[in-house]
Length: 241
Image 1 (cartoon, helix red, strand yellow):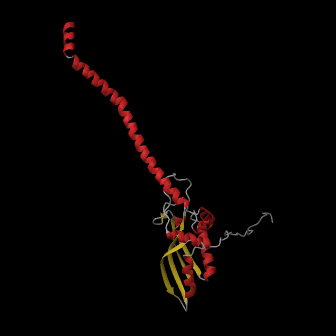
Image 2: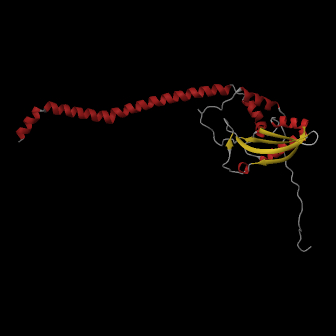
Image 3: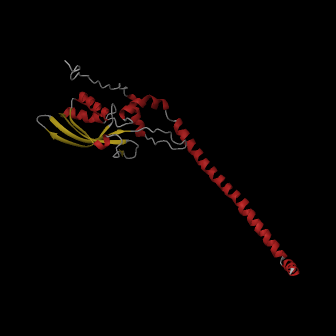
């Protein structure tokens, strides 16, 4: 039996040795060489990704170098009054009060969508192409032709809370008096509580936005509006008197 095995082994010695070599080579290739190749491919992929990020950072740095950061810093308080970070519908009423005194138009009615004004509403809508949110509203105003013209022009001014108008309905009353109904919206822009990634692109700017910023920078800084609440004593302080 042993002689048969020896003769068989000698007969197929070359094939057996070759098979063992092939098996060992395949084993070493699978467990050693292939992982090294995969790591090399991953390093190459990461290098390409890092080169792309580096190029984006260079582009971002070039864009930031052209921005007058001091101008944005100086005008931030003005911008935040025109487009606050919260809904702040109180400032909208203050804005209407100022418009009334400036144009001599009487505001008869203001209506806001309650779902939009309420805190935490799911009905918030973004303005197309921006991160600003809308506060839809309707309001009515009464005045003569001249004051109404001033009022409409002042609505889109940048001296206070930004308002835009979509629809105007005009009804002529007695004499030179006009009653107008407006459908439009105010805006607010929530500020992010986190800093974005370094390689994230900057918000796009255009000549129109730069022109608006220039107009805002030329406006005087409006003082903070202070709402004074008068205290009225009611009821009896002493139950026995």
